[in-house]
Amino acid sequence: MDLRYLGLDSVGEVRRNIPPETLVEMALVREEGKLGMNGALMVDTGKYTGRSPNDRFIVDEPTSSSNVWWGPVNVSVSEEVFDTLFTKVIDFYNRNEDGQGVLLFDGFAGSDPDTSMPVRFIAKKAWQAIFVNNMFIRPTADQLSSFQPQFTIINASPVIDEEWKEHGLNSETFIIFNLERGIAIIGGSEYGGEMKKGIFSIMNYYLPLKGILTMHCAANVDMDGQNCALFFGLSGTGKTTLSTDPNRLLVGDDEHGWSETGIFNLEGGCYAKAINLTQEAEPGIWSAIKHGALLENVVFDEGSRHVDFSDGSKTENTRICYPIDHIKASVYARKGTSIAVHPSNIVFLSCDAYGILPPVSRLSPEQAMYHFISGYTAKVAGTERGVTDPQATFSPCFGGPFLTLPPLDYAELLRKKMEAHNTKVYLINTGWSGGSAASGAKRMPLASTRAMVTSILTGRIEASEFVREPVFGLSVPTSIEGVDPAILMPRVTWSDGEAYDQTATELATKFRQNFKKYTVEEPGLEAAGPSVIDSTVIA
Image (cartoon, rainbow, N blue to C red; front, side, top):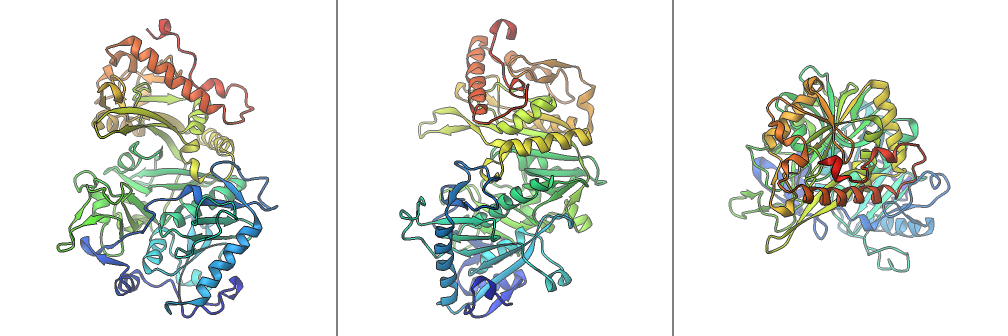
């Protein structure tokens, strides 16, 4: 494989799309990891056990500058700085000091053949080659013979930028995207998720400009491949748990596109959280841990190689990386592709630690746009003494760190798709009921939440009478099969109505303050959010 077009002319042997079995053997010989549970390779990702968003930059260049959503998420860097670090990365590979050459993976992002992007990854570590082999769509022999990459990520994790202050960066680590040249360079971080989310950010740039909505969500269908549902939610809201249904087939667990023909997975694998994993709670993920899978940063016994999934001493962000065909109950396992019909239902998941949002509600198109742009959940911050305090978190489109275009661009596409395909949108609160987390109230029972999701997916929820909830103006069902109706309207569950009113006012204010960050010219959209609280109406 000739890589001289990148300036890589003395890298040694270039090994392309090596089978994962060979890569595992290579990783073991190089002492990059150890074999563990069911033959999965266990690796540590070094200093970084998660993404480093403060070290992510986009080159400010003429072809893309007017499109990019510049700000805290997409920070600009000059072409000169990119060229300097690109040269540093290329020099590192050309020196080939370890004599191990280059590992190359060519594959695709996007299961829809009409819109998929050919992507190339260049790496030194065998486990990183396994990672991208698992996470992206593996080409056929015919596709590989005529492969031309549209975007290339060069992973040079040992390379650091000693002159980072002079270059205007935040540390010696760098993840820089050049949209004009179709190249990204990674230095200073071994974490595999930088490659995965890097390509997601790229797809979030190119596809919406073509009218295709890219989404940070899970998707599943019924056993006949119909009745597609999308699940949006930030970490801790239950996205993986609720989208994994024994009576349905998984399309994908994290990244999807919505085109004129339907839903398609952007990935060829899954990158599931491993912390507190049990076979009973997540049998599908548990069974996916086998030869070819990666276990990242897990704690294990050196002698028995037994993994303690409850141990977060290395990081709470322990991960499992595996190709999607490791999931038996998946569309890919049945059909060899991860494409589905247009969604009938969309579910926004929020873990509201304030205890204000209803456990389930139906959204109007304007409310769907409002809550999509808001991307709300609330985390509970614990202290050593067990004191808790809800912390509101807003991430636009439920994937703010990966948006390359302004959030309203995605929200407008969402509404167009919803209207064209008569898709209903519901908001589910998987958080607290009967009070806030700080008050000692309990979290919403999982069995009740599952019953609500089932009611949505079967359409039975529409048989219920709906009433207006006065804080956010949401439509709340008065009854759902298998759910105590007493928990459906939040204020009723609180023993102290005045405390509810005060907390509701606090949360509504946070929503309104957050929404002011976005320039929304559409009349009525801001009105789809929470209103000023009137306790006499609420009571």
